[in-house]
Length: 280
Image (cartoon, rainbow, N blue to C red):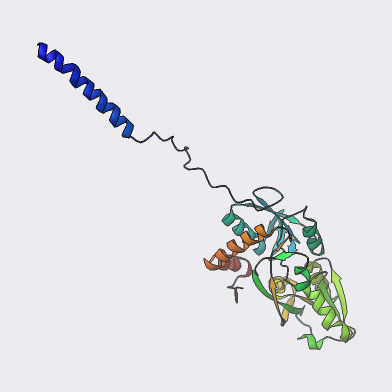
């Protein structure tokens, strides 16, 4: 019994020492993950007026790019920008402004972060704001009532009246190319008003971006038709303040993904009823 009593404390001490050694090798306990999984990565700071949100200025009387339906702003531009917002982790909010006030509003930098309003990229505009990569190809077009003898811009001359939207490239083209022929250029605040004047025969034709005019003319109740395309090699871009290149670059990255993975074509089909002839 004496030998057993002497041996037992020795064995116990060895067992305790081994337990301490093994516990030192065990990995430290990790805190449990949140119930909803790992925390989502915070979106990058893109210098917007409201963190995590892109406020978009738009002339919302320009379907199918943007219009107000039952109090909601909808359209091709709206869906495209929302898809971009999802890619970069930002909420998107559209606000309505007159088209010819968008650039001055963007320069002020206090009203909105981005312009999405079927705005054609031009050197003159690019001096005042930054543009995204092009997101749609567009030319000008000539629309008339269906029983009109006018089939091309060559048929317009002295005494004729042509409706355009104020501040647009269609207005610029008409003033440069039709006014010298004696055509009276009549400006309207929005393009739907110009087409209303055409339906009422207060003007003889409307010069406007082809995709817009085709969308308006597809309603048979209007009794109008797009009879000619005017090749101008125009492209639409999103506008940004010159001081915020981070937002522009993020939008360009997301836009490239959307063009590549088929999302762009899906959105285009929804609003124009056909595949795009080309993607810029």
